[in-house]
Image (cartoon, rainbow, N blue to C red; front, side):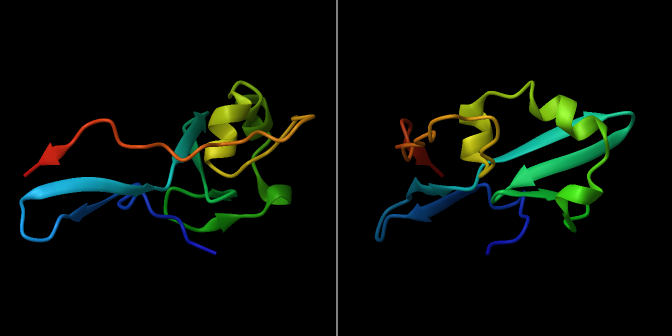
Amino acid sequence: MAGFNLQGIHVYEREPGTQVHRLVKTYPAMRLSANGQEVYIQHGRYWTAGGQPIKSKDLPDWVASEVIKCSPQALAECGIHVGVKEPVVVEPKQPEVEVQV
């Protein structure tokens, strides 16, 4: 399982022989905050701002009320499937913009 990584949310590769960089993969993450605390969601797990995994039983009480404010689609992109009667299908996103560096 992949670990927490905010630096690698967007992965680009350069086309050989060019200066064209293309987005090839994404690792979506979500930040929840309340009462001066932060919890991140990525790869279907909850994380501290320092990158340590948090077990569901150890989550602060406010996290549940923040999660229910999120759309099932956004949560599914981060690997969390809650309160969904039917599976949410998350299609891979194709980059729309070409980035040249």
